[in-house]
Amino acid sequence: MGKGEMKLTADTNVLIRAAVQDDLHQARRAAKILVEADLIAIPVPVLCEFVWVLRRGYKKSPSDVSDAIRRLMKSANVAMNRPAVEAGLSALDAGGDFADGVIAYEGEWLGADEFVSFDSKAVSLLQSQGSRARLLS
Image (cartoon, rainbow, N blue to C red; front, side, top):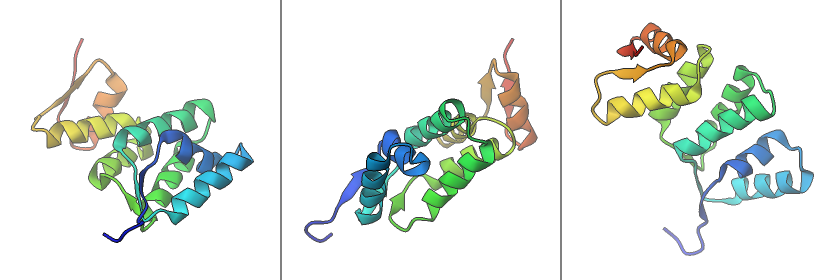
């Protein structure tokens, strides 16, 4: 690792500014740093917030949000937990919540056999994708 390498963790607001471009100054700064950095670490919670803000705050469609995340994944300088992100995208693309897909994936990775929830939509979506999920009542 050479001297002067720029390795950064991107906060949600940086990704939002770059994606939405509703504040021109911040959008330019965000795009510049995202391109110039040798490594941009994007933690899974940042992507959960990113999805939530774009869907709830900006009323973006699930496919627009999926496309934005896939663009990030294609960036050579982006590091993320790709299997967890793929699980989140799979849930989002199937009409569910990105976070539910990520939670089920990470739970399994941590050793769980089954996802349990009071959220019937999340449970049926995960079941339809072949995951063990149980609705609590």
